Amino acid sequence: MKYSNVKSLSNNQFKRLVGIQPSTFQEMLTVLTAVPKKSTRGRPPALSIEDQLLMTLSYWREYRTLFHVAMTYGIHESSVCRIIQNIENVLIKSELFHLPKKLPRGEGIDWEVVVVDATEMTIERPKKTKKVL
Image 1: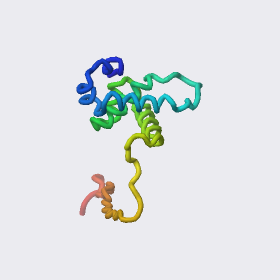
Image 2: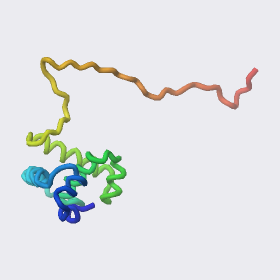
Image 3: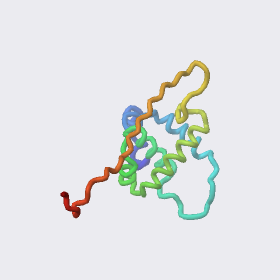
Image 4: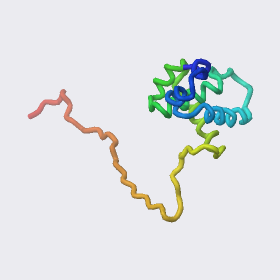
């Protein structure tokens, strides 16, 4: 799914697909384009900044695995993870959008935490080669 195909949708269809209004998408896009590039070395990105934002929003909206998102956009799973983390961090730092990534702290907030240890444990079983007496 490319942004060039999605931008021609009506406002209602765009919101149904992506989860936000086109105006909010444009605001996010201006925040992302205002960030200076880290480096100009290496291979150019496979996705434009619009497609990267669209991919991040579809990941948040649909809760698909990174593998499925990677197959949809034709890039590697690790690239999807890196792009989503980068987009999230830039949008959180801008403080223009409500993207809670950290738990709120302060007085009057009581957290009850239940920790469940669900790690797998190996069970020692007798070997089949041993003779049982």
